[in-house]
Length: 194
Image (cartoon, rainbow, N blue to C red):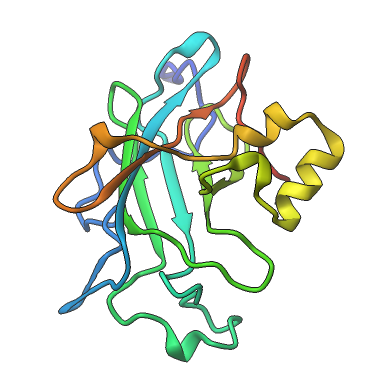
């Protein structure tokens, strides 16, 4: 009987090194371009001690600039922007960076502008889910998810859910916003059970 050595780390899932379908671009769909303010949402995924992680997969889903989701459970889905995907996927590079070309999300009902985000990768036993919020004044933002976070913790934890305007990321008319995902340790990103 012949035996082969197993990998040292067998926890999956395992992902390809590249996605060739342009799924990090949410603003171009068929022959249409999304309406609203285009933004570049970018940041790094970091482990304990600020170590960058590579080949992590981030998935985002969000409403269009008018606050409409491209999903049948949204009663206004027929009004969704034909140029906006509403969902995207990107992977981190060796330095831990990810990038999404998207639109500034519209508000709806009692929700402030936000992007939902899932993180998957080698070494994670389940996907991590968080919400990325946008507001000029995070302490004044009102949202039921933010209220739930502030009910169980201090304001500093709540502020970790906000993307920050970063002009160094501006690109071709798209405003840059930075949101780093800290998997563990000081400044850890709040994750939600899904």
